[in-house]
Length: 181
Image 1 (cartoon, rainbow, N blue to C red):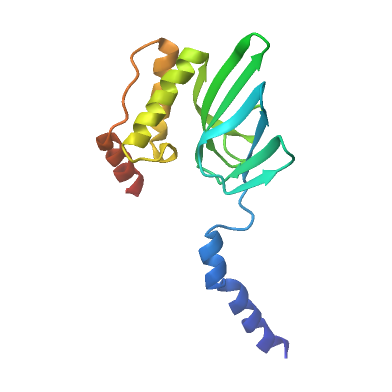
Image 2: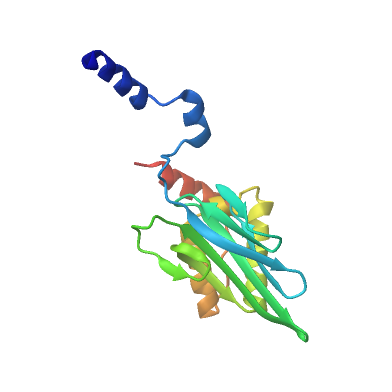
């Protein structure tokens, strides 16, 4: 009796339900990168500029947590002001990773992420936002752009060199290289 029940149980666990596979397309134990977001109307905004979270958890009126799958790219912007005006602009483009990957520890990002670009100050943040808008104008989602482009952009910002454009040809080369085994 146990012998006949064993193959049935093995067959059920080995073949997932088609509807379940279509919905998730990932293991149930996939670790998610949690990104804290906040919004206090006149003083503080910590929000996503781009990126597709797998889930979003709303904690209260002002706070939420976006959860990303491994290798997902996203951009988080921090803006702060006081009675006299803006005191902080910060933009970070990050790539989610697993807990076993080497990653930078970033406040509000658990367990951490690969930091591809870090812009600090109004001029640098506006320059990166212009590049993001240009990528969107090409019909490309910024989260689908090459991580190497974001690193290059961050390095050029730090060195105060002219910023490179992201072109359709560069995107096509990135997708081709990604498809190769």
